[in-house]
Image 1 (cartoon, rainbow, N blue to C red):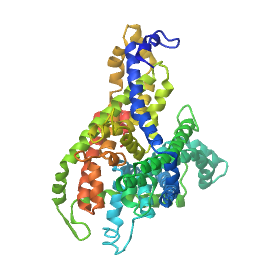
Image 2 (tube, helix red, strand yellow; image 1 turned 135 degrees about the horizontal axis):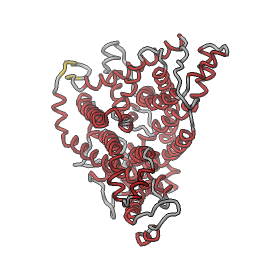
Image 3 (cartoon, rainbow, N blue to C red; image 1 turned 120 degrees about the vertical axis):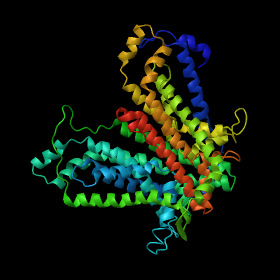
Image 4 (spheres, rainbow, N blue to C red; image 1 turned 90 degrees about the vertical axis):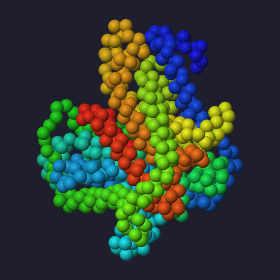
Length: 551
């Protein structure tokens, strides 16, 4: 669509008010940006290898092993994370489960950890020089491999299932269970025949979401998978170790297929489900009693997992203070002082995250606002704004390397390629949050302003900008936290003089400088919780957008 064609579209619409020329110009610019930085990198990855490259890669034994490993760990981690998430969601929604509030708080902590932190923490606590395994219990454990990756992914991703299933369980009205008791069923039978069938659609939805996340998990796999190759890490090893860019493109291109399939199924499945069992006036009816055996099974599972979550943070913080991990446990600030030698990488990460967060927040709000207007090809805009959510981080990294490594837009080696990659990858966060916020703004407010002669610019400035300010801040902070701790995209785009702190941490872990890596990781944790505190402070208790802030 050319700019010359804009006047023809700027007239009175049959279903809405006149669309102003300025809105159409912005619309074309946003579409052009999405095509350039979302569609073009995607096609660059898919068209770069030839058919013979795909055939060659598929015939390699290591690739076949990586593909089977990926399928195996995706199924295993999805099942275990969903099961643990259900236990925490059940505990949080039953009034007679002891410690429910504590379990709910602890279950959210893994969400705030950098992508590689959980695997790194369990390497510190349960590896061959692990504080718990070796020095407390005298065990010689090798946590590298599928079992270590399974543990890390289960702990990392069960909060996703917990959040989804908590909402589903809260939507099941107690009257359904009480009716079963009235008909003579026991509490256990009521939960089995009423509650469990009602929650099953949510369980399936949670499994789809977790499967997408596990499939694309790079941070945990690169730290703890060892000789258990998976597709997400295989792409990096091909590119970094063998300089095989075509091979990396083939791997991430194949990884894209199941990722998009799971993404589409999950959106359609979760979008069509309704979990409400009773509507209308509320009720003070109490829940039925949880069977004693089930109650204590839930408490036991949640307690064990909570211990692993606590060990996650304690391990990282203490490793950054221990003099020599594995031999001298005396606390010291030496590693923190040495970590400051990487202040350039820290500063680069913060600058990149600031720009990426601003790009995500502003472009997400503009795209969501344009989607709410009566513009042509709105469905195309919606699809392009959501598409990055289906792309694994390693796919984004390889795509930007292939797309912007030569004229006309040569960005390789600069911070801007990292800013753009992270900003557009996180775009769905801001777009969906703003779309939800726009749905809460009644159209009558805009109609009243138009009746008083307000232009589109005046509407944005005086109505939408103030009402969406908190959503903008939430999107910025969420993108900032994710960007400053990202590894799956950054690892493909760093260059000499343009190194991010997560890449430095990954190198330190590989070089067994665990205390130094832990000190830098602790810094990222502090930065994350400062952002969360700032979000809570600004949002207050009345802001639903920021109360749902998740890094």
